[in-house]
Image (tube, rainbow, N blue to C red; front, side):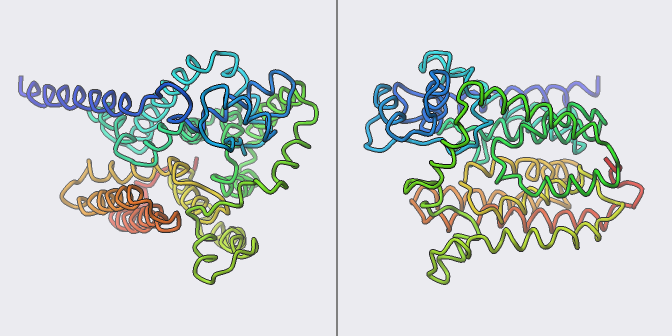
Amino acid sequence: MTNSPPKRRSLVFDALSILVLIFVAWSLRPTAGPNTFIDFAAYWSAGRLLLEGSNPYGYELLLELQRALGWAIPTPVVLWNPPWVMAMLAPVSLLPFALAKWCWFAASAAALAISSAWCWRLYGGSSRCTVVSGAVPMLFFPCLLALYYGQITPFLLLAVVALLWTLGAKRDLAAGFFLALTLVKPHVTYLVWPFLFLWLLRTRRWRIVLGAGVAFAALNITALCLRPSIYRDYTAALQSHYNPFIWKTPTLGSALGEAFAVRAQWISSLPLLGALVSILPIWRRWGAGFCWRRHLNFILLASVLTTVYAWSFDWVVLIPSVVEVLVWFEKEPRRNWYWVAGLAAAAIGFVLLQSSASHPVGILMLPLTIAILYTSAYAFQARREPADAQPGSA
C-alpha cells in the first residue's frame, strides 16, 4: 500500500511526458510542400534520382525535381552525405513525397525518444523515469531543429546508442553493423574510428570489423548498382562552386577564421588536426581503463567541436551526455542540481541566439557549455565514486 502514491506519481509523470512528446512533435509536423521539411526534400529528391539511374548530386536535376514538389527558392538543397548513404535513402524515395515525409517524421521522433530512453537505462537511470527520459530530446533544441528540417541525425543518434549497447553486450557483429551506420555523417563522429582501432588492437574483437565491413560493402554495392558513376558525381559536386564549405558553420574552425579574418581552408582544419594529434596521448592516459560507456561522450564532444563542418542539428549526438548528467541528478538531486541548471541555462541561451538569427559561430556556445559542464560533472562524480564502482571495460 505504501508504494501506491509513488506509483501514481510515476504514472502521472509518464502520461505528461508522453503528452509533451506528442504535442511538441505535432507542432513540428511537416506541412504541405517541402519548405518545412527542407533537408528531407533533398534526401527524397536524391533518392528518387538514384532510383532513376540519374545523378543524385546533380544541381539542375535536383532543382527541377524540387520545384515540382513546390520548391519556392531559386537554388536546390543538395545532399552532401557520401554515396553509401544513398542506399539507405532509396527505399524511402519509393514512396510518394507526401507519404514519405510523414513516415520519416514519425520514425525520426521515435528514434529520438527511443535513443534517449535507452541511454537513460544504459547509464543506470531508474526504471520509473524511463518514459520521462524519452521526452528529453523535446527539450533539447538541436533535436527540434532535426525534426523540423527532416534531418537524418536522429537515426545517427540511434546508431550511436545501439553501438554503445552492443559493444557492452559483446554482440560484435551487430556492433559492426551499427558502427557502419554511424557513417551517415562521418564528420560528426570521426574520432570514434581511431579510438575504436586502438581499442581493437588491445581487445582483438575483430568480429566488429567483419560486421562493419559487410554492412558498409552492402551499402556501397547497392549505390554503385543503381549508379556506377556515383563516386565521380560526388567528387564533382564537392569540387563545384556550390559546395558545403562555402557556408559559415558553428565549428571551432569557423570561429578561428572569424577571429583572424582568414577564409583559408587550412585554418578551419586546425582544431581537427589538434584532435588527431591528441589521440595517442589521450589513449595512453586512458590506457587499460578505457570503457566505451565511460569515454564515448568525451569522444563525441571532441568530434563535434573539432570537425571542419557541422550544423547545430548535428549536435543531436550530444543527447547521451545530457542524459548521463540527468541520471546523476536523478540519483542525487541535492548534490547535482547545479549541473542540470547549467544545462538549462545553456539551452535557453542557445534558443535566444538561434531565434535572433545569431551568427552561426555564436551558437557554438551550446556544445562548448555542454563539454565544460559534462567534464566538470564527470570529474565530480569520479572523485566521489570508489574505483570498483566504475563501469566495466566494454
